[in-house]
Image 1 (cartoon, rainbow, N blue to C red):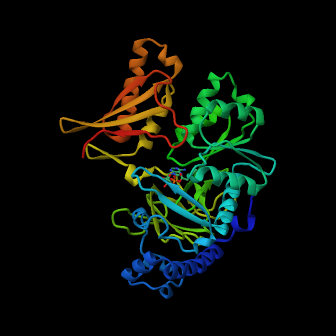
Image 2: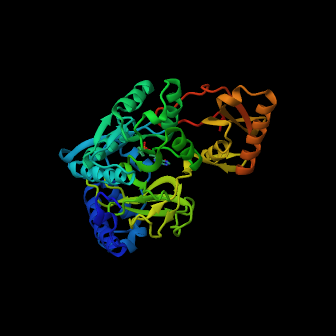
Image 3: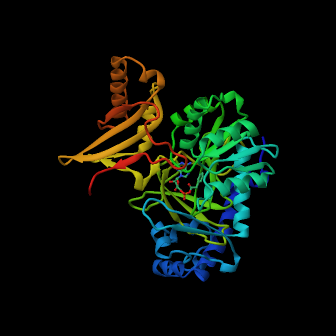
Amino acid sequence: MAYFQESIETMERGALRELQSRKLKEVVRRVYDTVPAYRVKMDEAGVRPEDIKGLEDLTRLPFTVKHDLRENYPFGFVSADMSQITRIHASSGTTGKLTVACYTKKDVDDWADMFARCLVMAGADKNSKVHVAYGYGLFTGGLGAHYGAERLGAAAIPVSSGNTARQISLLKDFQSDIICCTPSYAIYIADELEKFGVKKEELGLKAGVFGAEPWTEEMRRQIEEKLGIKAYDIYGLSEIMGPGVSMECEAQCGKHIWEDHFIAEIIDPNTLEPLPYGTVGELVLTTISKEGMPLIRYRTRDLCSLIPDKCSCGRTHVRMTRVIGRSDDMLIIRGVNVFPSQIESALLNIHELQPFYQIIVDRVNMLDTMELQVEMSEALSKAEDEVRLAVKSLAEKEVGSSIGISAKVTLLRPGSLPRSEGKAKRVIDNRKY
Ligand code: DLL
């Protein structure tokens, strides 16, 4: 079994908890002394740094939410002296104002280690060539993967996203064995191969490190088949670090969260009470190593559960299941909660449909409506009308039984929908609230 930092990745759980306890105390003291917003929050909650004696006191601490960061835009949550900050990223999200993340040199160093651990899980080593097709910009994806590849001693290829024709010719010419991009961009690249007359066998790819958006097992199957690779799920968010907070090992049964740097909890997003292992709720993360912008009990809004069992790979760090969606991306249609990922699963189980789809929600005569526009395979687009009708009703039936409400499926010709080079925009909600 290959590891990047074996003694940490396989650390005995008792020792890991001890390490977390010690670091938690330090970080709480640090933010109380250096971040006025945390001092206010903790004073309001009636908790002082000396009350935190270890992990068992974690739940006494107040939560941090995105709104706190926006209110203190841009640098209100910085805990280090600005002279120590060596990197600034930001994510735009959907609501406008940027969320800023500041890192010291040590933070960037730790991040590189964590991404290097992730790459090893995907089978990379120092002989690897890592094609980085995450955007570089202010987004954390590109540089996160880049530094991880370099830390491993592999060759980082900073292609960034976009210009798909060039991506394909570089993949072919350089024979990169690892590709890093969003799953929706991976499927786009796979789809374009044919157009450029390139066979998957002509590429040297062995594995992909895909994340930054929710995706499903059905999407994994399609990517693996179309690119002839093993597709791994990687998770992260700018506020906490960027990509590599957690990733799947070769067992592909949940993503190991690097617990020497983060403490993970699952809470009920309504009552805010902690939930036991195995129950789906909102992931809350505390950073225990960061210097630039440590965050205490940060509510990610991402819904998943934690798997504490020992993993066959030998790593001891807790795993998180696939993120089914963000609580703020959940659609409420005719009173029913629906996640786009449930729709993706249902649609992609039908072979005649392609992984390019859009969910259009509207309100007609006071009633919510949902239309699923999905592209047909080449074969289906050339088939008889009756065959298409049969596939359309099958899709409507599958979606209906999966989410519990009816949706109209519209089959589109291949290539009709806009392609994603980064995070896919799946939902168009035309309802006026
Ligand atoms: O998306 C960081 C990243 C880059 C992760 C590349 C993985 C790969 P943000 O732009 O701040 O950072 O968006 C973070 O994206 O809270 C999740 O809702 C979502 N997300 C990230 N990875 C996954 C994943 C990056 N594997 C937000 N599955 C997070 C589902 C994911 N959702």
